[in-house]
Image 1: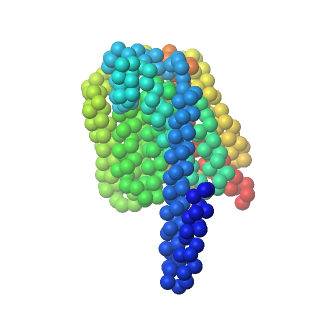
Image 2: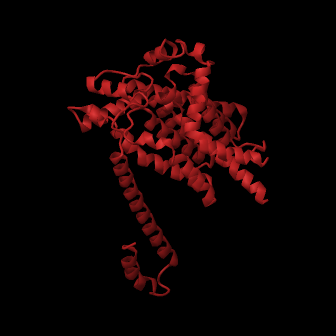
Length: 365
């Protein structure tokens, strides 16, 4: 605020010069000042978020597979073929910050991604909702959750995956409004798949969105869908290969004993796996379930009218993420792998807030 008063004092004589000054010039200058102030605020908040995340960083990596990552960083081993881009970035940044003891800086990427996640969520809430109250509820459900733990020095692939998921959905919103080309969400999906193979389950979201948003012939639409999906897969394979994740190795891990070729199918319907799913869902989504129940109780939040392509894609994003969580071997469930369910939070919250907003509009109407 201190910079506003001098700017107004300096600008006052110019504003009072009479007809020689175009009012639109003043509007443009004010707009530039607002953008500068907004940029300064964003940078200050980002630096503050990084400082806070560092201050409360995790001292022990007992959640997720942090202990495995720390050991691999210490010994310089290759690890986690399911997450080639995330492991490569984590290792590169850790070695750059602490060449002698890279494990001590393994959480740096997580801390740096925190402000970016908050910024993307803020932009997403502002873009999707006009009402400040709905925006606020959506923002709180996406920020003040256990997900924040991912950005406090959490050594895993999920901080990067969650940020790319938020960017992917924001790009879909832009594509739905014809502000960005379809190539942008396709590129982001490719990066997400390179960061973690779990993002392969998001491909149907891109395909259905591409199909439903086109207004041309079915043949041309099919070409657009195939092109978007092919681009995403090409980016994923190229990036993964560039950082050392050979496609043959990835396929072997997916269908071999570490993945679907193991005992995942045998254990998928076990009672223990069901308990894990319930526990993880309540941990991450309990407030969202309450909001959704309230919306559905009105009988207005679940009207099955024409669902826009964007929301169909968001629903498929959530369904794909849930399917991956259900297929994973239940022996790695419980607190150790709560983060496997973390990509489910964004689509679940967005869908619940949309249902609540529609129910509120119907009640007021």
